[in-house]
Length: 190
Image 1 (cartoon, rainbow, N blue to C red):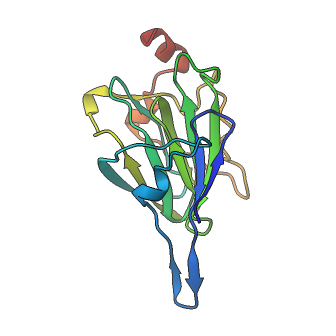
Image 2 (cartoon, rainbow, N blue to C red):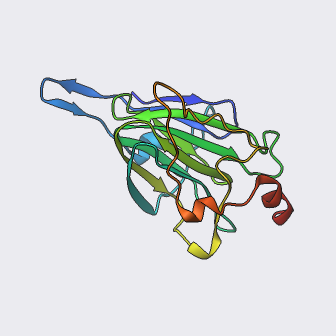
C-alpha cells in the first residue's frame, strides 16, 4: 500500500512506500508507474520520468537551491543511505504560496520520498555522516537553464537545522555561493 500525504504547499507530496523487512533486510518499490500515477483526486503525479540522478555527499554539504527555467524539472527525491533535510521553494508566480518553502527529513530509515512538481527550487542539507540521494526527474538537465538561489536568502528565511545536536557549518559549492537572491529571481522572471 502506497501512502501519499498532501503537504501545506499545493503540489508537494510526501510518499511512504510500503516496506517489507525481516532479518535479511528490507524490500520496497521505489517507483511503480501504475501506483504512483494514480488518478486519485487527492494527488496528481503524472510525470514521465526521463532521468535518474544520484548524489553522494558528506555531513554538512548543502546543495541548492536549484531550479531550471524555462524547462523546469519535477523531482521524486529519496535518501538511499543517510539522512537529509530536503527543501522545496515555490517559484510558481501565480501560486498563493509563491516564495514559501517546505522541508522534510528523508532517510534510509524512514524511506519517505518527497515529490516536488515543476516550478520549485530544490536543495538539501546532509545531516548524517554521509548521504546517498536519488532523484527522478521528468525533464532532462540543461545547464544553460539552471539557476541557483541563495540557500540563506533573507526573504526566503529557510530554517536550516544547523544547530541540532552539534553545530553544522554548511559546505557549499562555489556555484551555490554565487546564487541569486529571491528578489532578483522575482525580477528576472516577471
